[in-house]
Image (cartoon, rainbow, N blue to C red; front, side, top):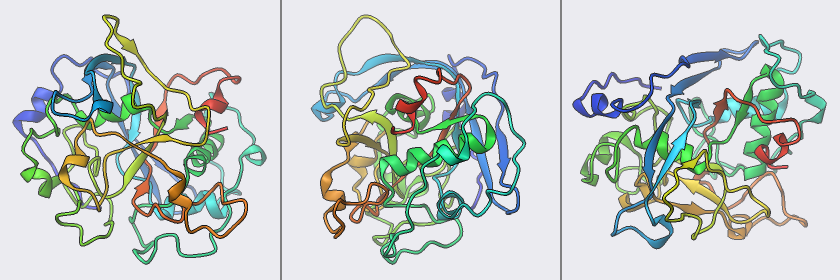
Amino acid sequence: MKKYCVFTFFFFLSIINYAQSKLQDYTLDFPGTSLKLEMIAIPAGSFIMGGNEQSPEEEKPAHKVQLDEFWMAQYETTWDLYNLYLERSIEDQEFQKSDLIKVEIDAVSGATIPYVDMSLGMGKGKDLPVVNVTYLAASQFCKWLSAKTGDFYRLPTEAEWEYAARAGSESSYFFGDDPVALEDFAWYAANSDASYHKVGEKQPNPWGLYDVYGNVAEWTLDAYDPKYYKSDDEISENPFNVPTSVYPKSVRGGSYKDEAFKLRSSARFFSSKEWKRRDPQFPKSKWWNTDAPFVGFRIVRDPNPPSVQELKKYWGE
């Protein structure tokens, strides 16, 4: 992973009107390995969620959202990290553990080992993003990590994802409205050579997050509803459209195969049964897609865990 120091004018603009975060960035080490998870503190604040007049209808109306602070992973989840959960290779290793979340490891569902190369030939080497995992599989990775650490990890909500991606901006992209600059920040159809790339090779957004646009699209917690945004005088606080069915779920960020328009901060997409089209199993795998090598995930840590009764809705259960 390459790291960049980007101290530009729009960085300073991005922190105006945002509360000073009480949280601090931190690094989570995985005992028995050299792997690390870099977590970025995202300040509490409000922003205008949604697109402009030229945006698709599912991005309208733009509306004000208020969010509590949280942490977000600096990078998209890699194959190396995901394989720790998949293969359970560090179950005998002890993490420095808090007492916030008490989940027994035995109660965490284990994803099945795939029968084919789920990278579809793009590789699973160091720092490459995991793909073709289902919403459930990504959520259960979060549950596993919560069980190991005692902290509350989950997927980001749609609102949290857009807020973090925007990093204080109100334009189509965090750097402005001209997509020409995407070359510096994203792998997408114009420069990816039809493949994902190692995380962190492009420049980060002003809040230090890499690959929020392109490379691989990212699961969010929410059910997808094209009519979910409402015009309301009230500020929407920590919105979360709780899923009640397997499809559709919301996906954000665009991927290596998408044109610039689909990488905008407000752009919304959704999962489909077609993502399992070539799965020969019956029933089809609940852990793996066969036709979504463009979708991965990025996790968040919530400093305010819900009640035990509510935890299930955050882990795809």
